[in-house]
Amino acid sequence: MGYTLQDFCAEIHEILVDENNATGREKVRVKMEKLLANETFVSQFCGPEKKPGVYKLNEDPTTGAVVLSHVMGEGHTSPPHDHGNSWAIYGQATGYTVMTEWDRVDDGSDDEAIEMKETKQYKLDPGQVGLFDVGVIHSIEYPDDARFVRVTGVDLDGIDRKSYNLKHTTVKTIRAESANQG
Ligand SMILES: [Fe+2]
Image 1 (cartoon, rainbow, N blue to C red):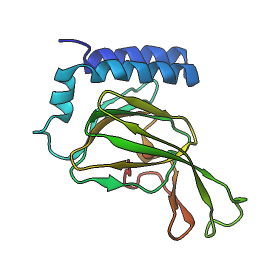
Image 2: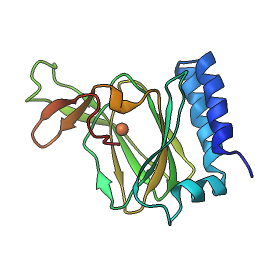
Image 3: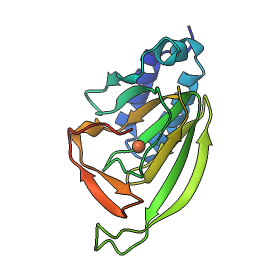
Image 4: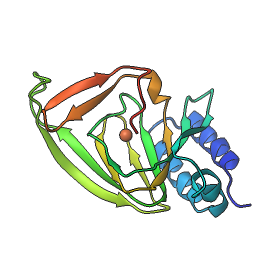
């Protein structure tokens, strides 16, 4: 049966209760690698017969951490965005995702004349897991049928986040409870 979703949720609960910090988040990242090594889990939650959509697999009432599976249909490139004051851990199940990290390099005084600089880019292949810590601005790019599992520190629909428009050099705040953008 291997390492199940239930095992994962129980273990990350213990980790985040004890260490709700960078050390704990790195431990959660490693646990997700273990979960994605379970082929039964991957086919059950991210298999080819699964309809595209975002599925909530667990929400921990104590720590607030949310586990989601993202079953994507068409490929997509997201704009740079942050997750407000939440961290996020992305684990690739099928396909791949190119992760790009950004810094806002202007003085922050004008939200309609922003300047963004790419700081890091890497690719996640199946079984690989990346961590975006609190405040990291990132964009993601994936092909058709890419699927990934994500853990966030809290339910992102409940917090304000920022989205950056590179073409129009603007930034806007996405208020709590609006659409989830990945
Ligand atoms: Fe994101």
